[in-house]
Image: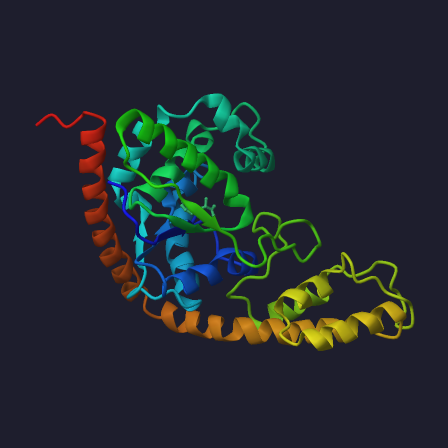
Length: 335
Ligand code: TRP
């Protein structure tokens, strides 16, 4: 049955620590939505991480704790959000198998997120089948708990579109079972990397992490791309495409002062070091409380695993209920 509830689900692949791109693209929304939702779920997508890391299970395993810490440090509250591990819910795999029949190979190959990542990873035609079909398994992640809202970065939009196509086919073939889902993208859907390239990414080596120290933040900001023609303080500088200003626009709360600085920079007479120093302080103000909370939480990994275990137990209960309904709808409820 389709219910009229606000059910939020989102997740991260445990392949590394999370960065500012995750924060503005999705984490801020997760933290906000957990207060408004009827139910809120956060999934650590270890099975999805394995679709491109089959040969490196240790990396995936080690990062389960890291992404949990990042989210908790940013304010995800296990009392409000069910935090769980994907691989512990076999019902998601079962639902994936049923969904596989509703999607063609051609459609998967057209999914822009899959296409981009296949290019990044250099797969060509030799793409692991599991990787190619991960949008289908992501639809199962989203639908096993009948979620209706998915806060994600902009790169994940095609996944939600594909999920809604699966919803349509499923409901048409087997009766009304799932709701359409909405994606919710943060105020900054895509954060540029510190090198000015279009996207901040771990594999691109251009990220500022939510766990970075003051020294790391300083070094990264000092290395940031500005305006290559702004050589002397008195030179006129360009603000568009200048990563330091892009970041100040996003993270500096004092919009008026930023606009003054921009004017000054364009006129000449404002050095890169001044604006970089300002950005360092702005980012440190944001990251310091997260880093400190993270360090404290990291002292007790057992407590974090306990949170995940309890969340997983609850998610399993929900998954069982959905699968009973799904099996009945697909007429594979024999005994
Ligand atoms: N694909 C997402 C990412 O790489 C992670 C993810 C897996 C996810 N399952 C999900 C996100 C379900 C939202 C909903 O960031």
